[in-house]
Image 1: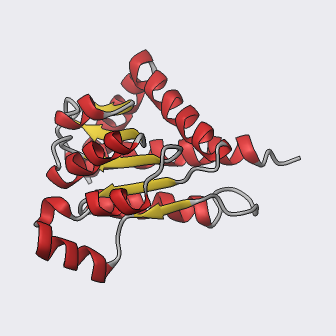
Image 2: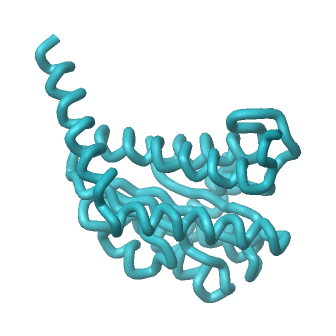
Length: 191
């Protein structure tokens, strides 16, 4: 039980630190505004990540296409995963190529690529972000640690300053939920 108490204390301490961190809060707001502008201009949200971050990327799409807090029309979003395509591209271009081909085929200038990485150095996300830049797609990165290499390619880099991967993922999920709530309220404020 003591270890759970410690985990809860660590989480609360990091949450309290971030609640006062202007750079963190501004980056969240910038991400929200970037997504809103994209959707207003008939763009879409594309998400990617690896492992637990892949799950969170898909979860975010579920909140956009399905619903977050209340019933409303779907918002355009796609997770850059498809078993056959991912394995075919991985076979032909290597694992680092699995997302960039999706961006090349689906990305347009009004779109947003939302990449998630606890290290900030995921090679396949970096390659997708580079492809997005070339196509005029906005890059948002949800990161951990010091933001790694991905922060340099991001139009908005949301960085959780920790090396504790499970803790980073917890805060990532909170950030995703906040963005989903804010975007949903912006387009469909419930009366």
